Image (cartoon, rainbow, N blue to C red; front, side, top):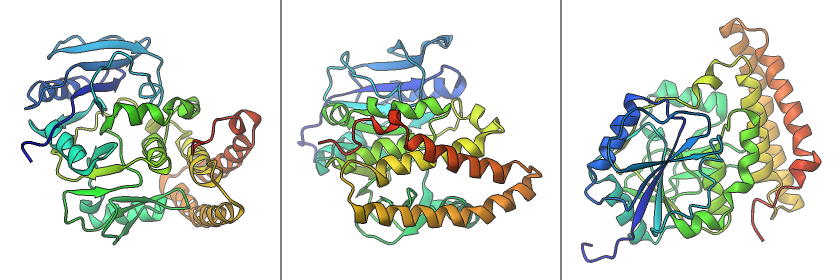
Length: 329
C-alpha cells in the first residue's frame, strides 16, 4: 500500500465568504494535512468580500455566483491530477486527503466522496422523516453506497461494513475528482439549476452524471471529514416562504433531466420513471397537507402543486429541451 503511487491534488473551495469561524477551522485543517495540496483555491462569488483572515496558502478567485457555477469551472489554473472539491464548512482530519487519494488509487475511481451526512447512522425519527417526506430509503445492497431510484430519490446503504463502496450518487461537501473526469462530464451544462434561486439537488445531479456517463464513483465512509453546517448558501432558502415551491420545482426538473429525458431514454424507461415519480408526487399530497396544518401555513399545499405545474412547464420549454443531453454522446 505504501508503494502505491498517489496522484497529486489541489483543493477547490466554493464559498460566499460568509461562513466565518467555520471556514477558518476548515482552512486550518487543510494546513494540517499530512499530504499537502499543490494549491488551495477559493472560488468566491462575485460581489462578496474576501474573509478578513489568511489561514494558510489559500488563493482567492472571484467567479460567477451559483452552487453549480462555482464548481462547473474549467480549472485551467490547476496542474494537479486531482481536485478535492470542498464546501466552506467542512473539517478534515489530518490524513483525510491522504485517505481519499489512497482510496482513489486503490479502486481506480474517477471520484471518491466522503460520507459526510452518514444517513445510515441517523436517528430513527430522522430516517422516518426522510422516508416520508422524500422517499429517501435504506437499501441492503452489498455493492452500492447510494443508489438513484427512478423516482429521482436516492437510497442509502443501511449497514455499510466496508470503508469503501461504489456508488451511483453522493453528497457533495467533500469530493475528490480526477481533473480529467470532472472536465469530461461538462458540469457547465447543469448551470440552469442555479437560475431557480437555490440549486436544490445539485450534488446528486452532478455525481449521478458521472455514473451515468460511465465514470467510476465511490464513497469512503471513514474519510474523517465532518460537516460543520454553516449553511451559508442554504440559509436564505430555508427562510424563504417559497421553499416548498422551489424544492418541488427543482426536484421535478432534476428528475426529468437525469432520469426521464436523459439522452439515453427509451419509451419503456420513460414510462417506468414517470410511474415512479407520479407515485411519489401523489404520496406527497397528503404529506404536504399535513405539513400545512403542522406549520399553520395554508400556502404549503398550493406551493407544492404550483411547483409541479411550473416544473413540468419549464421541462417542456424550448430552452430546457435545448440543453445538451445529460448522458453525453
